[in-house]
Image 1 (cartoon, rainbow, N blue to C red):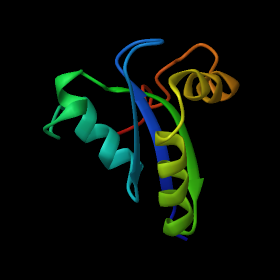
Image 2: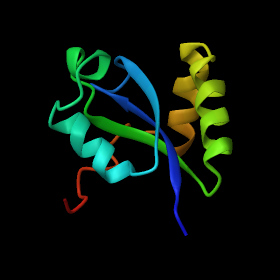
Image 3: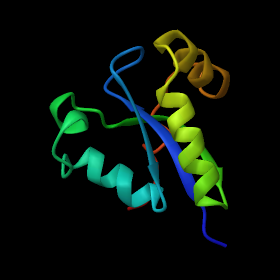
Image 4: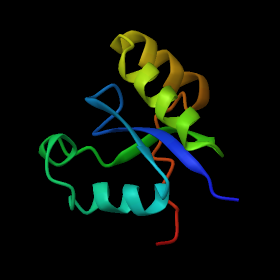
Length: 96
């Protein structure tokens, strides 16, 4: 079964936040870490995965991404801290 993910990356705890969506989370995070994606995430060095959710239906994931992107920063921080209170890089030990 294919999984789709909504994720949040940052450059440091309580730093700049970026919410994204991908059908290949490990590949997407590797691209962020390698600064292979031009634009916002590269410009602000957003390489730390601090939050993600998995979906089997891509439409649900895209809707959730849009919902989170519409939130104020304080609400995004609260979401992250419920799952990852220490803001650790959830992908730091992933095997690439």
